[in-house]
Image (cartoon, rainbow, N blue to C red; front, side, top):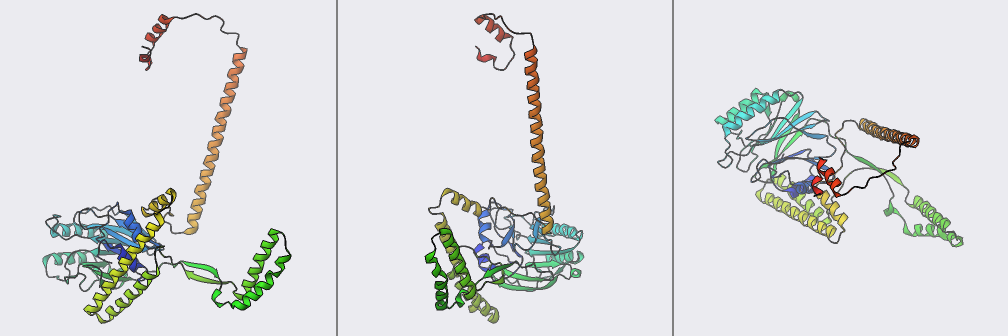
Length: 447
C-alpha cells in the first residue's frame, strides 16, 4: 500500500520489478474523467480499479493496480460516508473482501471533524461485523495510532477492539513520524503473515503486507524455438548449398518454391532442431527501451544499497535515480506517441486515441470457470441463432399471408360485376366545399 498521489511514472517504473499484488494506492488525485492517465499507468498485463476523488480541487481518490490474473472485482458496499472515501473489492479466488480507505485530514477547508469520522467509522465497523468470510481493511486513516493515550486514538482503537479487528502496522508511515497508514484484519482469520514499513515515495511510506493465501496461477506460454546462435555457419552453408543445387533443373514455380522451403527446413532441423520451451508471459510497453532498462537496474542497485545501509546519502541517490527513471519513461512515452500519430491516417489516429481513452475495450465477463464460460457463450450464441431463424420464419409466414390475401382480393375483383363507367366533372367550388367538410390536419394548405 502506498500513500502517494499523481505519479503514474513511479508506478510504471516499479511494477515490472516489485511483485506486489495488489497495489492499493490512496490519494491518487484521479477523477472519473481521467481515462488517459489510468490507461497510461497500467503496465501490460495489469488492470486498474478506480474510485474517483469526491472533491475535484484537492486530494482524494483510491486505486488498485493488479495483475490481470488476479480475479479482483469492485462492488458497491451500499455505504455512504462524508468524512472518508472507501473502495470495496473482492478476490474471488481466495474469498477475501478488501476495503480501502482514505480519510482526508480535518481542516477548515473541508469542514470535517475527527468526531464525525469516529462516528462514521463506528457505523462502518458495525457493517464489517455483518460480513462473513475473511476481511482486510487498509488505507490512510490520518489517525495517530502511535499515540494511543490521546482521546481520538483511544476511541478509534476501542472501536477496532470491539469489532474484533487487529491493527498490524508498526512504525512510522509518514515523514513526520506518525503511524497513519493501517492494515486491519480479524486475528482468527490468520490472514496477515507480516507487515513492514518500506521506503517512502512521497510524504507517506509504502506499507508491504504479506498475506497467507494462494498465489494466482502464472501465465505460462509454450513456444517452439531454434538455437540459431549455436549454428556452425560454414557447415550450414555447405549443407544448404548442397540441398538447393537441384533447383537449377526445375522450371515450375510451385515446384521450385516447395523444394526451397523443404530444403531450408531440413537443413535447419539438422543444425538448429526445434525444441519446445515454457516461458512466462511477460509483455513490455512498446515505448520501453534499453536506456530505461539500464536506468532501472541502476535504481534497483541504489535501492538495495540504501536498504542495507539506511544512510541518508544512499537514500538521496536512490530517490534521485527514481526521478531519472520517471523522466526517461515520460520522454519515451512522448516520443513514441509523436512517432505513432505523426503522419498516421485517420483510422490509426482514432484507434490510438480510443486505446488511450479505454474506449471499445472488449473483455470477458467475470468468471470462475473457463469451461462454464465457454458453455454459457455457446448456449447464448445458439439461442441467438434460433431466435433469428424464428424471426425469419415468422416474417416469411406473414409475407405468405399477405400474398394469399392479395390473391384473394384480385380474384374477388375479377369476379365482381361492379365497375366505374361514368365520371362527373368538378369545378373549384366543389373542391372548396370538400375542403370545408374535411377535418384533417393539412386543410390549411388549400387556402
